[in-house]
Image 1 (tube, protein in one colour):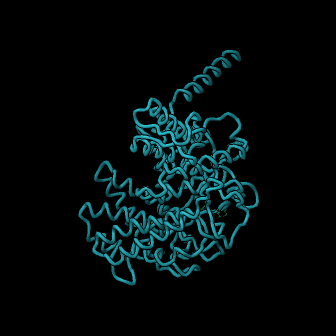
Image 2 (cartoon, protein in one colour):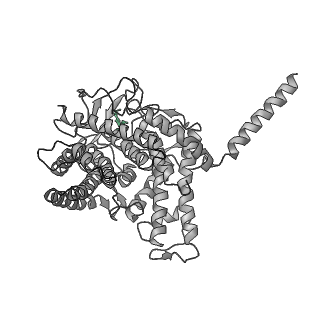
Image 3 (cartoon, helix red, strand yellow):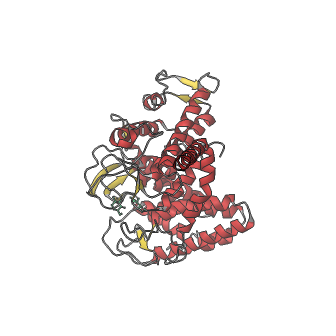
Length: 465
Ligand code: NOJ
Ligand code: NOJ
């Protein structure tokens, strides 16, 4: 009996490991997508929170993430705007419409709630909508910019659907002082972007590439909306700010080090980010690129920074030296936040590993659209890391070149590798904030809303999905 049991158990183990191996990455993704979506939506207006609040995680202690962060919420709502746009049935569309409406009303309440920042740069609110009064890194000026970007996209969709009245009533009206959510955010961004503030990681005060990219996009997209609604004066003012922000953003490119430096003119907060490297540069592209060619996913300065970041995390994390597929990506090499306190050591994050997948997919799409790749001193290293070291600076690999298809498939396959890495540490598709740099186990806030959002936007860029 003992023996037949062992044989049976062996067979079960064999079959289950086989079935895991047999599920392709694409099938795993298709299978986990609904799960990720459901878990993300569960953190919007959860019980114990006001309608329209997006909690960063359901966790209420160690760590306490049951708050409405302006940044996390705006990024999640950008995903909901996409779901609204693509809704397969009128019922689904109506559902997402209500989710968005709750968020708009809650956001306007946030804007009008007196808070310790004394303005719209307040980073987070209690889940019931009241002000958070504990000490914190304030202000964080990416928040209003990201909210304006997500809602401007919604406004354009509503306008195309003939809902101009609704746009004017809820989102944008030219009168000042502003009393519509987008207009208030655009006014805030246009008058405050020059100030130093805390970065998206809530740690370092200065001028940040990430924040500036979000602010620039808010100004560019907001100007389009303003012009559409006949607010020409405001549109001109926002466009002018966008040009000044662009000039400032160019200062972040360090020609010598060949990286986009994350923070300049630091004047507060942590002081140990020696390398200047930060994966938020990739997020800056995802959240701040607005389709006008300025720091696009295939920009050679972005790709140079990606290569340096990969190199750094490869060396730094033990789990990147064990032959596991793909690469684990964290915030920045000197990170000390382990998901609970900032006195230990940082780890890879799911949302950043997903963001790298998304970057590779988006870069490949741009190469394809452009019908070629030009090898430059900046991106040469990026291509070398794909096993394409034979390409020399100045080479142009056009669409008819025998290697062009190979380049595209290598770039996309590397995107897949990052998703395989996520799968390895989260086979059931539930994501915390981090996974341990030594053993790969998940840690930090469980069910981080942003992890699910980042996973969804990444898989939506995967060709054939
Ligand atoms: C410190 C972390 O480094 C930061 O990113 C985080 O937002 C806060 N603690 C709050 O958890
Ligand atoms: C810590 C992260 O550093 C920050 O970007 C985020 O807003 C909060 N956690 C909430 O998720």
